[in-house]
Length: 382
Image (cartoon, rainbow, N blue to C red; front, top):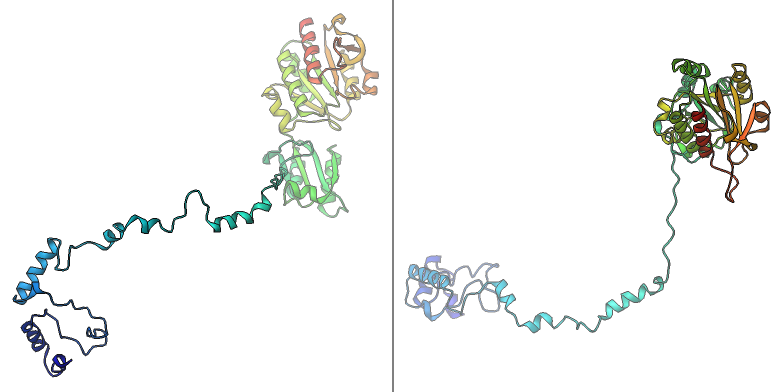
């Protein structure tokens, strides 16, 4: 303390010269009155202690000598080594002394595992089944272009004469334009079905209380079928479907009819499937070449065909073996549903009933398969 008390009234240069005289370093003794840089007596100082390697050198020589020693790897206090290298050269036991043995699990991990012991025997929950919002009542996917929602689009489609398969109306009292649309649909003999409003919301949210399923393809007429037969210079060959509700069967029958050379397929408006997207897809493109007409009453249509000298044959299990039947001339085949077959009223107006022999234990054939066999029997006779 005696040495430094005389420094209070000296300049910085005086302090440095006094420090050099006693073998110190450049800035020894400077700034001792600052709070940031205290002396080495009880405080932390940034100054390095004087060493014997610095004695007897001028300030410039001390600086150059220190630079050389630093570049050579020695600074007067041992070999120079970066901090990160010193950390890497620690003994291996310091790195691994906190690492648990591989054969012994840490206790904290054991406690964590015990928390999940009660969940180990639980089975995963079954996945939630979401319904497709674009499915119709038959479970077939309805393309957006075949779905009409809202009152104005349905009204304009009815006015333009677009073919509508059916109209779904929310259950409840009808008022305003809804009553008008339902009346227009009934006049055009379009099936109208009342359903819950939730059913409509499951298909599309913006329904305004009614939805319409448009046909995937334009229907033809009975007259167009007769014209096609005249163009080919052939006797009319038609296929009538009574109660076919499976769209895949309808598509397969249309496909077989086109391959066998028929002039048209006739379906019913009610209690039967129409030209839905699934039926058009099942036809594999045959609907582009095969006219398909839709009639209200199949029995009345048969009477019209008989007036044109067309023989009508109905497929029935109690009928005559088809191999003994003469199919020459104008022919119309009536194919019934797989479950009920041809209805009694339609059977009564047909000219003849024919059957396919069954040799196995199953008592019936698929409707589309039976139709294909009978159509090629007609094609062979023609």
